[in-house]
Length: 232
Image (cartoon, rainbow, N blue to C red; front, top):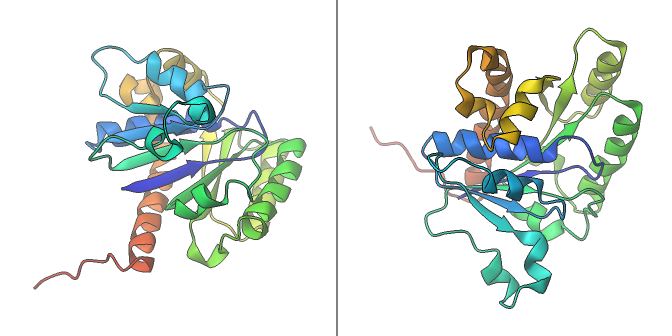
């Protein structure tokens, strides 16, 4: 089971859209997939609810309701047996120290950032909180930034790119500012499920993200001693 946390304390960075597309990709690839939604706005959960009847199944766990559930929190947050990929959608205003246990369990942490001065400033502090408050280790290579709703060849994008590269944290990809994401999410779908020709550029933008995630999974396995020796 691999856990991917999509997080940023700044709201409006597209965390739920990215979480939904991650879940869709892995479900289509044949992995039993669950979204754990900690955001009280419940965007990820609503996306799962809107999925067509014939769409591949994705489990949704409304973690924001755990405090009011009439069962133990551990049972409430437990994914279905056989789950292989868990995508965790976090709320705005996240306190990295309070969320430390969930972050520590993650195999990969993706931080979406949009090209605005406010986002850049907020993300600087949030990444510092991850490294200090949650005591995540930069050398584990489990944290990366993804530029969201970006338009290349603009002053704002160049500032964002300069900022991300200065962090010495992987800047894995840039996702376009396009209606393709909005339209598919509204339908309970994703760019990977739409199958339209106009989605091809957006799908290509994700290839670096998934390559980085696979490297994270391999690194996580090595740290936990799960590497399987190849046989001749």
